[in-house]
Image (cartoon, rainbow, N blue to C red):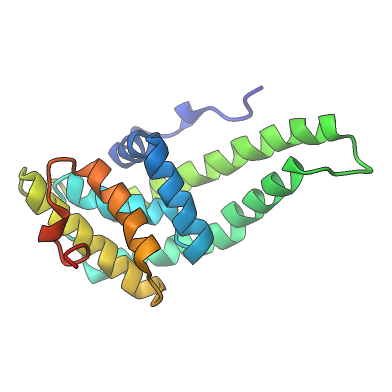
Amino acid sequence: MAIYSSAVFPPSQLWDFAVKLYNNSDVSAACLRLQDRRGLDVNLLLFCVWAAASGRGRLSDQELVAGIDAARVWQAEVVAPLRHVRRFLKGPIAPADNRLGAELGRGVSDSELFAEHMEVQMLAEILRRPATGSFDPQERGIEAADNLAAYLTQVTRDLDSDDLADLRIIWQQAFPGADPRGTGLFAG
């Protein structure tokens, strides 16, 4: 039983891009590892990549900070509590009925996805400028890596080789013809 309809959302290039990229199993696994290991916001990672991939180029400091601020509040107050409940309901929940818990879990999962979609919509509203950048995949890839680096600088200082490997998986799926060595983030 679906609780929500995605039809209530206006069309969104960012959402379409994010869903397509995230549906790659390597990308979703990399995103979830970065979320669990470093507390990174998957929607912000995909936003950083999409801004460049869509021809909107590098995010300004104001756009990035606005995205981080909006996402931080939304994640803390809405998404993270739903995620916590969803994960809790996956285990045994005695003395409650596990069958009923599984049904509740499906509803919470639908709510979490709806909340994620709302966050993506908020991020898309922050970046309303038209796509005017290069169509060259290498240029767009460099801009995406710069956006990711700028986001990471704002939220973490402790990237390791596993983190960079996961970021590279996401980046390469978004820019399959581009060379990661041409970017500042993946040059090393």
